Structure formats: C-alpha cells, structure tokens
Amino acid sequence: MSAAAPSQHVTAPRSRPGRRTWSLAALNGAFWQLLALAVLYYVCVRTATGQAHEDRLHADAVATRGSATGWLGRAFELVERLEPLHLVLGIAVVGVAGLLFGRPWRAVRGVVVSAGTLGLTELLKLVLLERPDLVDGGYASNSLPSGHTAAVLGLALGALVVAPRWLRFPVALAGAAAAGAMGAFVIADGWHRVSDVLASALVGSIVFCLVQVLPSRDVRLRGRLTTLAVVVPIACAAALVVVYAGSAPLTTSYVVAGAAVALTVLLAARALPREVRRRA
Image (tube, rainbow, N blue to C red):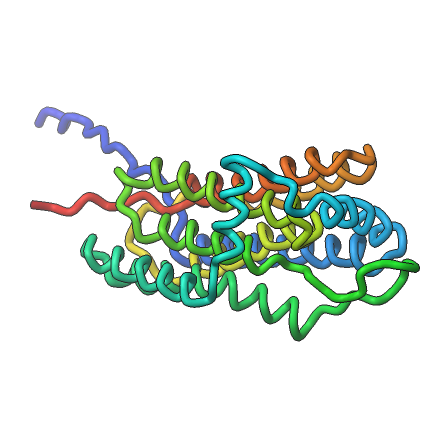
C-alpha cells in the first residue's frame, strides 16, 4: 500500500480589485461627488438664504481687503501676480517630472488631472452655472468654483500622480499646504466665496477619480479611493455647517474651507495605487 502523498498547503493570493471593479469604484466616486457639487451649488447659489450667508462673509472680506501686513501681505501680493502662463508652466513641469521619473503614462495622467481640474472649473463657472440675483445688494456674478484654488489643487494632484512612491509624502504635504493656503487666501481677500473654494475641492476630487479609470498595472486599493469619494463631500458639508449654521466670522470661514481643500490632497495621496516594484 503506497503512502499517501503529503498534503500541500497552498497560500491563496491576496485578493485585489480587478481593473473593472476599480473603474466602477472610480466612476461611482466621481458620480456621488458630482451630486454633492450639485447640492452645494443649489444650497449656496440658488437659494436666497444661501446667498445671504455667502454675501455677508464676502462683504466682510471685501471691506478688509488689503489690510494684511507682514508675511501674510507678501503672500497676498504673490497670489495677485499669478498669471495663466504660470499655470501652463506648472502643468508642463508635472509632465516633464513624470517623464524624468521614467513614467510616461503617469506623466499623461498627471497632466490630465492638472489641466482637467482647471478646465472643468472654468467650464462650470463661465458656461454652465449662473448666479441668480436673489438678494438685494448682493453680488450677482457667478464665481463658483474658484479658478485659483482649482489651479493649485490640480497641480498638487497632478504632482502626486507622477511622483514615485518614496516622494509622495513630501509632495502631499507641500501640495496640501499650497492648495489649502490658496483656498484660504481667495476667501480672505474677497476674491471668492466659501462655496466657490469647496466646489473646487469637489471638482479636483472628481477629476482625480475619473483619471483612475485609465489602465494601470499598480496595486489598486478600492477602499482608499472610496474613502476619498466619501470624505471630501462630508468635509465640504461640515465646513458649510460650521461657517453658516454657526454664523462663523471671516477667519473661521477661510480656515475651514482651506482645510477641506488640503484634506482633498492628502486623501488623494492615500488613494493612489501602490507601485509594483520593478524586477532588476
């Protein structure tokens, strides 16, 4: 009688979401954030109550414009000097960085994220959305979403996409600081309303999710992408509650709005697919 063959214990490979599952998660995330953007626009722009709250803070910012001194005043001067050419150069830097790191497809994705965030913002603000005159003495021109915030946020997200994994953490911190600061600056100096900045955060996250539909060989963590799609709208809603339900002062309004933009960058960094190590 022959001896029984020893049992072999085969370790099952860790399950990873396939390309189709990941793409569906990215599309679902973009859809729900687009819905959140529509709700934000309706509440803050299409209702008299929303406009009244927005215009109160905006009037305070306009009244104190130019009062910043020291390093803060110099920061405002720097922001005021930004031109479209600077954005074009920034997008070019993102693409070149991706090529220098030996990642041509990531370079393309990074450029799409950077340019797409601002492009969608300008399309919404200048073509698709309008601001009805619902409040006497209000500011009738539409300013949602914020182009300056979207520009810096898009560059931060694009830089994250092209950066190698070992460089993502410092890039995420720098990008979050820059995008959050821009969101705060444009509110504090009366360029934009709070909802404009929060809308830019949603637009950047939507474009980021849509770009994730493109094929990738890296390890994709669907849960982290879902976290981005869920937390960014929640952060925007929480910011609105803090600012308007609590009748917050101007300082609180631009701090919480800037924090929501910064959080978007940090969550995007966490949601990026993990790199597959190349064999020597």
